[in-house]
Length: 327
Ligand code: GDD
Ligand code: MG
Image 1 (spheres, rainbow, N blue to C red):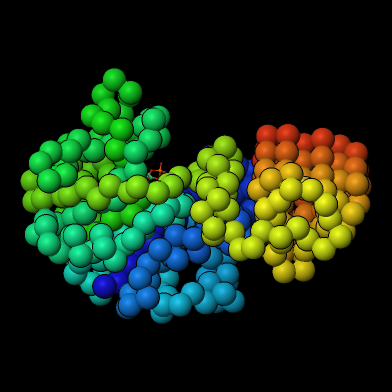
Image 2 (tube, rainbow, N blue to C red; image 1 turned 60 degrees about the vertical axis):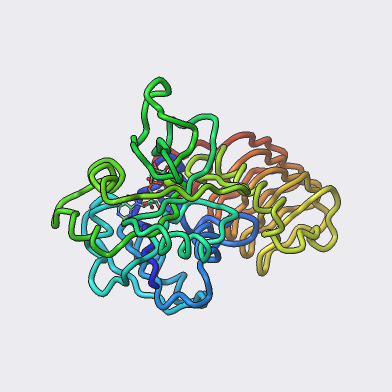
């Protein structure tokens, strides 16, 4: 089987950082979001096709310098085509069936067993489902006998949500679904195509472990906590010469001698936390500096940002050289 990863969104809910770096390259627990998703794929996947658009050069460059364990091909959109349009644009040579991945979700999921379930079901699709309390940001499934999906509503009002089981952004489809997507225009796969496929048999695959969509600051930091707690943040050891709790994922070239940490922190490549500064529940991206005595909590600090000595940054998304930057 091949996999098609959707990676072209603007990441609007993580601006201003997503003005300077695509959402999927933001590191969580020491690794870009995209790589946590790809890690879920079985080893025997033949090829991963990345359907890119927004900041495609940055994605290409990163993938070239950090090659994943499967052959990778990127297919670019010259204008955003939406999830369905992105699938259509990348359809050539796709396997039957294929994995479809949103590239901003983190999950404990056994996609190999989902594929076996898919083949046994005889249906056209199998969708991993996560149980959440607030269904508003997601696509919601109604389930019938044998977990067959009987209705699917994208981002419904709570009163219209048929259940608490939502599209986890990890699914398997027969290649024929690609023929159902109209060419050369923006298409939402979830809104325009999925409801019409239900008659051909689309089944839910309920996930039991953790799941999150890292598309907002709150959910991104929650996703990072889940990754660390799920053992996917490396050893989490405090950087040399620092004190505090951890886990901290200190990426190559980062330093923090004399600094202190609360729980759940990623220090991106070459990030620096100066003596007397403190960071907790945050992501400090590549080359950013938290100066002496500064305190960063619950925040996403973009590449190259300097958090001024002695200042306090809380629940913020900071970027340099981007419109809308609040500093
Ligand atoms: N190639 C391409 N082109 N990819 C896109 C485009 C596009 O125009 N727009 C979005 N994507 C990618 C995003 O980068 C992301 O990886 C994925 O498609 C889903 O887009 P989001 O913008 O993150 O969608 P969402 O989070 O609001 O909703 C989706 O994900 C939920 C689970 O996280 C839907 O699939 C929901 O049904 C689902 O519950
Ligand atoms: Mg999303």
